[in-house]
Image (cartoon, rainbow, N blue to C red; front, side, top):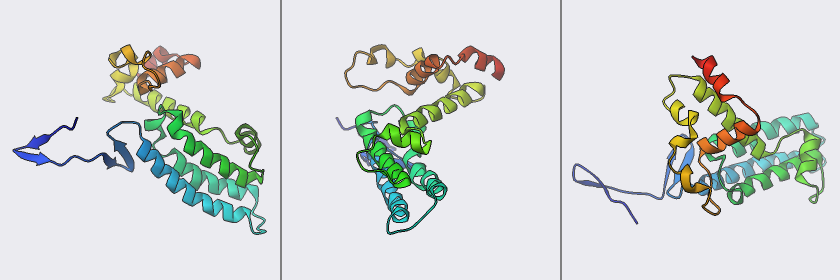
Length: 198
């Protein structure tokens, strides 16, 4: 159902998406539109990398890797702290672009596995980067007593949506819940971080 908003009797136009600091937010909160924008930008940057890998050019690996890090990967990971818990079916396109870029770096054939390419180039999967970025953001947030979102990140139970979300098929957990679970798996002591921030 559409919601009608009015201010001083004037109806406010609603749009399916809104852009803020380069991030595109949609009414479904699945970041599909934003990730599509990232894919388009990264693909354009991938063309440059491909041009250095074909046509007989002998571009050193280290140069191509720098271009990958600063152009392709930067496009793929912008705002990753926000969409890190998005469904894999939506972020799959980003993984495909990374795979194509790593083949350009190594000269490997299309059938080469992503894991082999990542080992050969010493470049981590995008999912690992997303989790790492979210953990860093989470740690900075709970370490700073002045951060207004600190309480929410300290206690995942404060988000009421978590009470039913585990039983919802194909749903994504909240950023708070997901990050706390990841911290537990990595045996990160939340209380120790909180004590250091006092």
